[in-house]
Image (cartoon, rainbow, N blue to C red):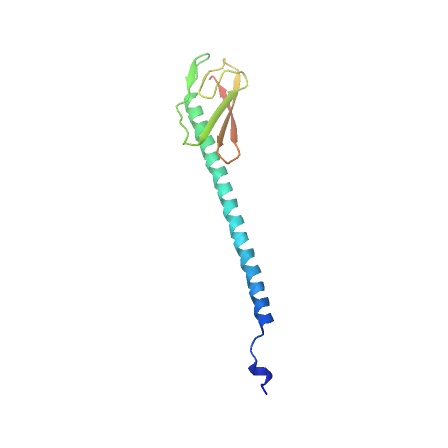
Amino acid sequence: MTKMRDRGESLIEVVITIMIISVAVAALVASLASASRSSLSHRRAQDTDVVVRDYAEAMKLSTSACVAAAPYSLAYTPPSGYTLTGSADDGLFDGRSGICPAVSTVQVVTLSVEANGSAPASIQLAVRTP
């Protein structure tokens, strides 16, 4: 006759243990995948924000010496995969070039950048002739 201590683990106990460990590992893998997707999305948004700010800096540099009714153009090339768009409230800017506003008026320019797989980022600038 065998004693109760010598029997070891039953098959049911082993199967239940494996199921519990499997559920824990599956939850861990799912949370790691979710964190990875979230990190990639945040990185794309951050990169788009950097490109729109670079676009705005190029715009500020191009218009820093504006003379009323004089043309200006932007010398900014975005990284590959990014699309630039721009418009002005008075229609005198097409995203790459424009006309300086008259003295004592303000031209509000909206610059937008869009990349594949991320939401567009935009910024507004006020252009004026000193």
